[in-house]
Image (cartoon, rainbow, N blue to C red; front, side):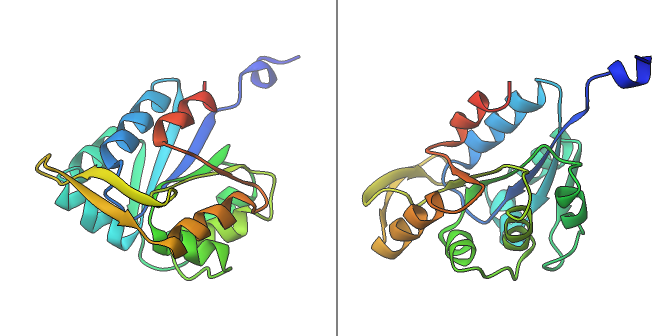
Length: 185
């Protein structure tokens, strides 16, 4: 066997961030821990994800800490679908995922970069991991950008969509961003 063939394959992840603020710091921490395990992490940020990252004062950190950080300019731009479908990436991760993103995914609407990425990647064997912020009925404690704690009440429709997401082909729903660490060692 030649040296070229004996080298391990570069491990690459396409990581999508939507406009959800809940568990955003935990998501960024999980991203850093996974990257430290010799993964290349390319970050794809939705238009609203950019707004929320800036609101939480995390945009520069994400832009600088990972191998690339690209902002959505349309449902197919940047063009990541080819790289996902042809196996350049080992997985597609969407964390955190808004209720809007989850609703679109479960109803087959692929009109944003990240919903389109999920729809097209689901047609392959590339695994998809999604952390939806609205998973449990009732109130959840979350944090504002200034650290102040507050509660949000989950809507039944959003909780139901998260349940539907769990039944979709090729999609693994996560209970928290921290759970990703067990999949990427």
